[in-house]
Length: 272
Length: 272
Image (cartoon, rainbow over all chains, first blue to last red; front, side, top):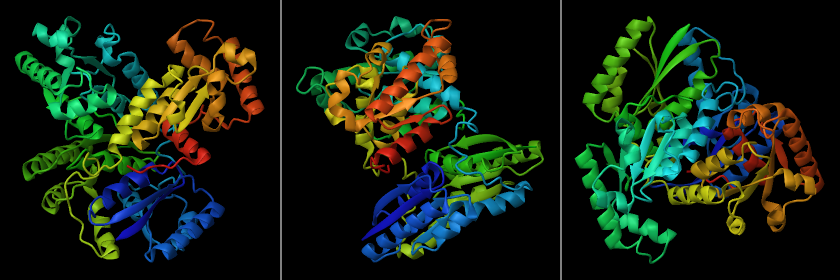
C-alpha cells in the first residue's frame, strides 16, 4: 500500500518534517510518498496547497496524511478544508501549553529556525568553521579549544560526525586520523597526548570499512581487506591500552553516533 | 519567569527536541532551561529520569514541561508518574494515525534516526564528502554531478549552507568563491560558465560581512568596510547582469537559507 504524506509549514518545515518522519517510521508496512511544503504563509499559498492535496487524494484513492506546524489559525483552517488527514501539531499542543504556562503563545510565523530567536546560532557557525579548520589532523594547535577530539582510522566516520555536532549543537569537534604509522608505533600520536581527556575513539567493522574505502580508492592497498583488518585491530588495541572510550560506528547513523558521544562524554547538548 | 523543559526519548531525542523547541519558541516571555535525555529505553533509566524531573520541579516551584517520543508505553507510563507536565507526542498521534492507516504501528524504539530505516543515509554521507571535496572552488571538475553550485564573496555563508544541504537532505552542493579578480573582470568565472543553470548566488550586507571577516582576519584590508562594500556591490551587479538568482543571507539562519534555495531552485527535498 502506498500513501502520501505532506509536511506543511509557514517556516522551513523542518519541525513538521522531523515529527512526521518519526511517526511514519512506526508504520513499516506502508510506503509513503513524502512532500515538504515550506513557507505556506498566506491564504493564497494555502489555497494552492489544498489543490495539491486534493489532487493527490484523488490520484491515491486515499487521504494524504498532513503534518503541519502553521501558527496562523486562518491559514491552518484553510489547509483543514482539504481532503487530507490532518495531524495539527501546533493546534493540538499549544492550547494545553498555554494553560500550564499561564501565558499566551505569540503565534509568530517560522519562529523556531529563525536566526533571531536562535541564541546558539553564531556558536553553531563558529563550530562548523572549527570542524573544517581542524579536520583530519590538519591543525592540532587549537585542540585546547575543542570540546571533543574524535580519533579513528581513515573513513571510520569522524568528519561527518564532527560536522553534525557543530551544525546542530555548536559543539567544537576536531578530528585526528590514526594512520598506519601511528598504530605500528603502538602509541598515542604525540599531538594528542596532552588532550587525552577530550579524545573519543571511533571504530568500524573491517568489512564495512573496506567497502567505504573501495568507493574512494578502488582496488588499492588502502582499501584491501587485509589492510582494513590490520588497522582496525591495531587501533582497537590502542584504544584499550590507552583507556580511550570508543564506539563501533558500523550500524549507526551520524545522528546516533553524535548522540552516543554526547552521552558518553557528558558534553552538554546545547539545544538550539 | 524561568521554567524547565525536558526532551526525552528512547532514541536520539532529536524529534522530541525539534518539536519541543518549536513549541517553546512560541512563548517568548518565558525563559526555558532545556535538557535532552536520549536513550531512556528501560524502566530503570525511566525511574532515574523521574527522580531528575521531580528534583527539578521542586527546585523550580513549577512542573517541568516534558516532550517525549518514547514508543514503549510502560516506559512512557513510568515517566508519566513524574511531577512534570507531559506532552506525549507519540501517545497523542499514533492512535489516530493507526485508525486512518488501518495499520498497527510497530512501536519500534528509536526508529526514525537509525541507519537501517534511513534509505537516504548513504546519499547523505556521499553528499557531505562531495561538499567537502568541492568546497571553496577547490575542484571544479565534478560540477556536472552537483545538484547546485553556491557562489558568493568570501564569508557570505556558502560552506555551512552546502554542508547543511548535504547532511540533512543528501543534496550535492558545491561552492565557488567570487574573488576580487572575478568581480573586476565583470564576468562569470570561466569554471562556472557551463553550469550557469545550477548556480545560486548568495549576498550579504557589507556591514555584517565586515564583522564576520574581522573575526577571521582582524584589521585586514580583506575585512575593511571599503573592501566589503566594493565586493558586495560588484557581485550583486554580476548576479543581475548574468541573471543569476540570488538571496541576501544577512537575516537568515542556515536552515532558512537552505530551505529558500530548495524552493527557488525546485530541487527535490528528499526527506530522510
